[in-house]
Length: 319
Length: 247
Ligand SMILES: Cc1cc2nc3c(=O)[nH]c(=O)nc-3n(C[C@H](O)[C@H](O)[C@H](O)COP(=O)(O)OP(=O)(O)OC[C@H]3O[C@@H](n4cnc5c(N)ncnc54)[C@H](O)[C@@H]3O)c2cc1C
Ligand SMILES: Nc1ncnc2c1ncn2[C@@H]1O[C@H](COP(=O)(O)O)[C@@H](O)[C@H]1O
Image 1: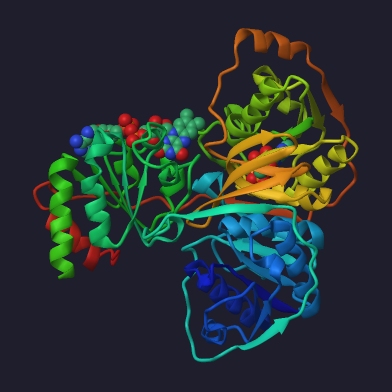
Image 2: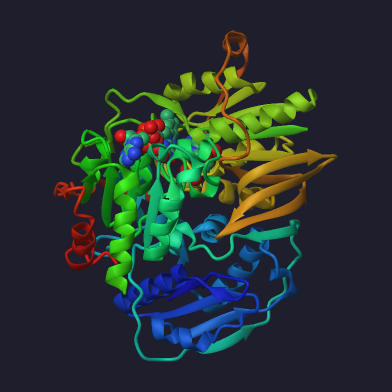
C-alpha cells in the first residue's frame, strides 16, 4: 500500500500543478498511514531529491529513449510497471492536458476506479469518496471509488502547495518499453506568457472591448498584476484573440485566486468556466449585466476609462 | 475507411442545475437535452468532412444510453453519418461506458474512433483514453486540427502551454475540441434522411462499474457584489489587496 504521484514535466521543467499534486498525495498518505512516492518519466534537469520538501520519500525516475516525446500509450506502459513495482494503490495526477491523456488509459489497464477533476481530499469515513466538479463548475459530485486501486486527477488551484523539511531518495527504474506509434513533428510553446490554467490571476476581456486593437488596456493590467489573459467565446470566434484564451463551458475552465472580467456580460456558459475563481471582479458599463450577480467586487463604468486607472493604482501599490 | 463517433446527450448549456432525492439524483425536470457540444461540433462534423472528401468513408455513431437518448441520436444522424448504435444502458461510470463502447467497437473494424474532449455534464474527459487502452489503439487527446492523407493523419493537439503537431497511422482514438471543425446546423434534407437511417439497439455486456456517485452539492451562493464607484479605482485595488488578499 502506498500513494504514487505522477510528476508532470515538460522539457525538464516541473509545473506548479505537480507541487499541488505532491502535497495532496502526501496528505492522503499521511491520512492513511502509508508512504507517498512519486514517479517522473524521462530525463530531468531539476533537483529531484528536493521534491522531498512536498512530503514524498522516494522518487522513481524512468529513463528510456521512448519517453522523449509524449505518447500516452508509452507513458501508460511505463507507469503500469512502476505501479506494479511499488504496489501503489492510490495514484495521483494533475487534471491537466497530460493527466487527462494518461490517467484514463492507466485506469482501464489496472481496472482502477478513476475520478477526474478532484477539488478536495478524499473522505474516508464511509468508503473512499472524492469530491469533483461536474456540470462545468456549476455543481460538485461526491464519487465513491470501489476498486482496490484508485486514481485521482487533481484540479489546478484546488489544493495548496505545502512545504516541509526533507529530501527524497531518487531511484532510477530500468524499464523496457515498446516504441509508440505517434511521431511528434513539432512542438510550439507559447513563450513568455503565464499558462491560463496555472495562473493565480486572470484578466479577461469580452465583446465590450469593441475590437482587438483595444486589448492594450487588458494586457497592461495583466502585466501589472503578473496575470494571464483570457477572453469570452465570441471574442475568440471573431479571432480578436487566440482560441486558447477562450474560457467557459466550451472553452477552458479555470479557478484562479482572482478573475477580472472586463466588458463581459456574464452569460451562463461563460460563468460555467470561471465561477470557481476565488475572487471575481466585474467591470461593465451596464449595471444590469448578469455578471454582477456572480461577482465579489464590481465597478459600473466604461472599461476604457476605468481599466487604465486600475492599472495605475496596481503599479503604485506594488511600487 | 470506417469511423466510429462517440456521442452522448447532455443538458442544454443554459439548464438550471438542481438535484432531487436528498441530493443524490440530477433533477431532469424541464431539462432540454442536446448532443454534447464537443461531440457534435467537432468530432461528428470532422468525421462528416472526411466523408465529404471521400464518399467511401462509412460513419457509425455510438451512444450508451436508454431510449430517451433516441431523439438526440436522430439529431446527430441528421447532421450526417450512416447509422447509429445505441447500447441500451444507463451510463453508470466512465469505465462502464468505455467498456460498452469497446465491446461494440472490437468486432467493427473501425479505423478511427472519435470522441469529444469531455462531456459538459460529467466532465470526465476519460472515455477516449479508456477506449484506446481497451482497444489497444494509440490515443491522441485534445486535437484542434486534423488532416488525412493516404492512411496517415497529421494532427495538431493541445499540450500544456502550447500545441504539438504529430503524425499517426490508423487505427487510433482521438478526442476533439475547438478548431477541429466548424459548427453546422442540420438541414431539412438531413432531418428527413435521419428518419430512415438505421438505429440499432444492442444490449450491454454485464459489468460492474468501478465508481459510483453518492451525492451532489451546489457551490455556496456568493455573498453579493460590493460595488465601488467608477471614479475610485484605487479603492478597488486596496480592497483586493487588503480585504480579499487576492494579490
Ligand atoms: C452552447 C453554447 C456554449 C457557449 N460557450 C461559451 C463559453 O465557453 N464561453 C463564453 O464566454 N461564452 C460561451 N457562449 C456564449 C455566451 O452565451 C455569450 O454569448 C457570450 O459569453 C457573450 O460574450 P461577451 O460577454 O463577451 O459579449 P456580450 O454578451 O455582447 O457582452 C458584452 C458586455 O460588455 C459590456 N460593455 C459594452 N461596452 C462596454 C464598455 N465600454 N465598458 C464596459 N463594459 C462594456 C456590455 O454591457 C455587455 O455586458 C456559449 C453559448 C452557447 C449557446
Ligand atoms: N454515454 C456515452 N455514450 C457514448 N459516448 C460517450 C458517452 N459518454 C461520453 N462519451 C464520449 O466520450 C467523450 C468524453 O466523455 P467523458 O469522459 O464522459 O467526459 C464525450 O465527448 C463523448 O464523445
